[in-house]
Each structure stands twice: as C-alpha cells, then as structure tokens.
Length: 106
Image 1 (spheres, one colour):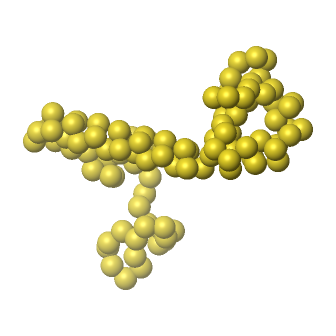
Image 2 (tube, one colour; image 1 turned 120 degrees about the vertical axis):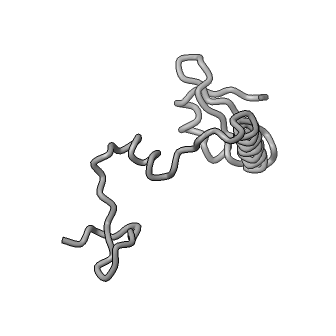
C-alpha cells in the first residue's frame, strides 16, 4: 500500500482518497499510528470478496467429505441452537404447515 493517512487526514481529504482509489491507488487509514482500515479500488475489494467466498466453499466441501454420512443438523436445529428451543413457528390458518415470516395464528 503506497499511502498511509490518519483518520483525521482521511476525513479532511476523503474526496481525494476516493479519486486515488478510482485510479487504482489504495490508502491505509491509521488510528494512533496503527492500521485500522483501507480505501481500495472496488475491483480489488470485489476480488477479495470472491476469494473469501471461494475459500469458504472449499472448506465447506472438505468438511462434508471428511464427515461422510455423519448426521447433519436441520435448519430448525440450527435456529433452536441460536435462538433457543422456545421459538414457535407460525402456522397457516387453514392448515398445519409452517409459514415463514407470518405471526402465529391464535
């Protein structure tokens, strides 16, 4: 990264830093002398996001290969782990199937 600026400088010169990013020049923003963020060209950011997604997908596939036929958790199990088992799923008024996003029928 070519340029490093403080938070104060970044605030004062944001338009110039964005222009530099458009030209392909990244800038590191520091707080108390330590790097905390970067302004980068959007193409570099998108490439980083794609690379991170690819890495996560590869890790997920590797985990699935390693686990083989091991039991898997359902979405309901995951939600219960996150929000607790007391969550009631709303029901359709005319049937017994769950309807996502609707309030429970009394």
